[in-house]
Structures are given as structure tokens and as C-alpha cells.
Image (cartoon, rainbow over all chains, first blue to last red; front, side, top):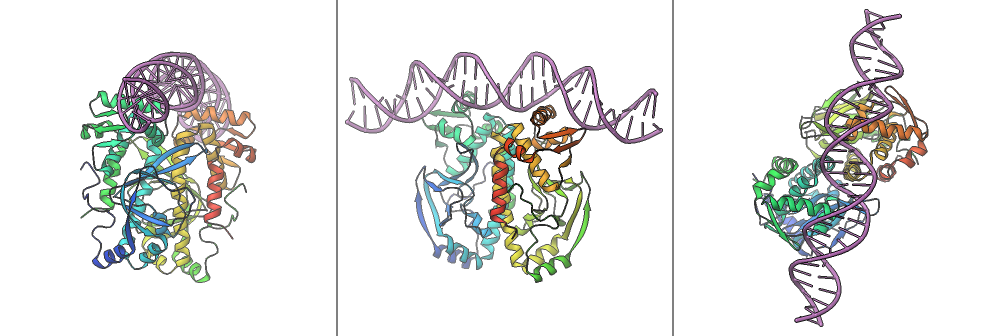
Length: 237
Length: 237
DNA sequence: AACGTTATGTACGCTAGCGTGCCGACGAGT
DNA sequence: ACTCGTCGGCACGCTAGCGTACATAACGTT
């Protein structure tokens, strides 16, 4: 298993729902296009909508000391933005930034909370998702602390590739530096190393994954661990 | 406001419950003594019980790369161990280690899940607690990444003092090193610096907080932020 | 009082990563 | 074709923290 994403056509939290729940959900939501760089939510802002990405993906970022940033989670078609509402809290915990343009299912926050009352299977699945995110947050804390930039970059590229569903990623070193909370020059060095090993190729804002398995080798185990966790807790039957 | 703990006599997640819920809870639980160093749960282990510390406290620790450890959260009388069960998951996400000996309310995992069905106020409060923990996990990730040992140590001592409810803490540098995921010698240097500033005093396994306000100054803002978050989301009326 | 054990102080060279600044190269737009 | 803004390569000295090792100091036991 090399990816957490097996079904490319829909949001994975919504597959395999009972007919009734699926219909109720679909009736309440609509499809929107998310464009790159859009800030969907600032920390502590109130949710107006919940998003279930289809082929877009969203970075969840901690802002600290006013100027420092660190990505701690990502929500693509395996996840959602707005899981706090499942807990009954309508406040965004993190900065949410569209990192990969594409479409998403969107549902009004109030309607979503109403809907949950009558969709026990969905609700249970989303609770499991919250558990997965919590565990990933904890792992991320340790990963960011102990692992070196090169390993973390490899991991990040894999995670992103899974969600983007392509081996061509539009990313600058500058942007990656913000995601990993390091210097731009630090990314350059790590990227050079990964390119020298034949794992990636890049030029001016585009990174191509050449050797996915090699990249998994080069990344810390956090990547495989995350995949295994998701597969265990939220299997796509 | 210098502490998240205002009511020293009971677990704060359980205060201000409606009479009915309180009675139902108390009928289902009993008091246990937790001794220092006891491992209550290994990661992925199945919950048999849920704990609501009264004057004990529990460290939640990520184990990574088999030998590295990092504390990412703490549960004292402001929190609980076993919140995953509120999400319907009976698997422990982290290593749970008794860090401060004392008593706790304990309830059987199955009974707890049953109980939740008939205690909506408690359930809602615990969901809010999960939100707080998630946000703290995210903040911790950034804190561990960006802040220096001395600041992090100051923060850690404050958090611990809140839960211990005394200014005398029984801690070795060795133990602190494990909590913060750094070298023992790194702790020694940071402790020397804090002592030189007159904020703490220590000798052979005992650290005394001398100047709490000064320690807050010396810590990163993560401490105050955490306190503010808890006070906002889980006010003790 | 002597002993072993455990906690702390300190020193060594080393590495990862920082902050900064500068330069060249690419490419989109005129 | 030129220009300008963006992107990436690189180099400088610097800091925090690492791994390790060893010495001292306090305590608990006998």
C-alpha cells in the first residue's frame, strides 16, 4: 500500500454511506471550486461552511508568534474541513489555506449540524476521522521536532501527491519553507539532495515525483504510519 | 489569570453537571490511586477504563522511531484520559504515563460509553475538551519546533505546577529531558539559566517554583495561550 | 562511616539549521 | 527582444542543540 487514496472520484468520508444518508447529504450540499491560495478560514473564525474536498486540498496551519507558520495537517479527498462542528464547536482551530485548486462539496455549517442528527453512519465515520487527525497531530509534533528537513520534505511531497493525484506539483521552495517551518534555503538544499538521488525533478515552481517508492524510502516512517492509521480506522471497503 | 485551575477539589470536567448526570456518573465510577511512573496505556492498546484525575496527572507521550519520546499533552484535574471513547474509539492513541501520583475517578470503558448516551451535558463538555486538546496538540507541534529549550521548560513547569497544585515538583533533569525530547544536559543548562534568574530552585530531583509570574515571562506564549483557550472553551462557572 | 546509586555539572567536537544577502537564471508580459 | 519580477543556488558566520563522556555531589543503605 503506497497511498491512502484509492478511490479518486469522490470524497472518501462519504463513500459507502447508506442510501438514505447519502441522499440527505447530497441534497444539502453543493459543489464549489476552490482556487489556489485562498484563505478559507482564519484561526478562531466562525465556520460558515464545511468542505469535503474532491480533487482540491487544504492545508491546516498553525500561526505562532505572529509571524511563524507550520503546517500540521492537510485535508484532501480523504478528509474534510470543519470537523470541529462534529464536536459541536463552530470555531476554526487553525488557518485553512487552499493548497491545491479543485472542487469540493460544501455544506452550510448549520445544515451540517442538523444533518448529523439524522445520519449516524456519517457521524460515526467523521468521529473516526477526528481520531485519525488527533493522532496525526501528535505524530506531527514529534516528526517536526525529531526529523530532518530532507525526510520531512519527502514525506510532505508524498502526502501532497496523494491528494493532488498527479506526479506534477506546483510548489515553490518558498511555499514549502512555510509549510515545514524552515528557511527557503533549507528547502533548496533538501530538494537538491532528493533530486540528486533521482527521486524528484523540479524547475521554477514545479516539482515532479520521479520515484515514489524511493521517496517513501527517503521519508521518515511518519508517512507510512499515517497511511496505515488511515487505512485501519477509515477503510474504504 | 495565571492558572487554568481554580477549583482544587474535583475534576473540572465534572463540575456544574446537572444533578441527574452527576449522580449517574458517580454511581458508575470509583476512586483509585495512581502511583508515579505507572504506564496506564500503551499506544494502540484498548481502553478498559477512563480516568478523571483529581489530584493526580498523566502525561500523554508520542513514541517515535522506537526510542524517541515526546510529551504532547497532559491530563490533570482539568482533563481526562480516554477522550477517544467519546468519539466511539476504544484505542489509546498515545502512551499514558502517571506523572503525578494521586487519586482519580475511574470508570469502566463500556459503562462510560453507555453513560454518555444519557448525559448530554457531560457529553457536550467532553467534546469541547477534545477540541481543546486538538488545538493544544497543534500548538505543541509548533512550540516544540520553534521555541527554545529554556522557554519550553518554563512552560512545562507551569503546566505541571497547575496540575500538581504545589510549588514543589519532584522531577529529575533526566525525566524532563524525556518530556521535552531533548538531552539531559540540555535541561541542565536551561534549568541553570532559570535558577540564575531567580525563577526556580532545585536540588536532586526537586524543583521549586519561586517566581511564578517571572516564569510565565520566561516561557513562550504557548502557556498563556493554552490557559486562555481552556478558560474560553471550558469555563468553570 | 563507608558504600553504592543516582542526580547534576561540565566539557568536547560536531551537526542541522538559522539569518542574511547576493547573484544568476528563467519566463511572462510588453 | 527586452525588462522586470520571481525563483533557485550558494555562501557567510552564527546559534542551538546533539552525542558522548567524565567528574562531582547528594542521598540512602548498611
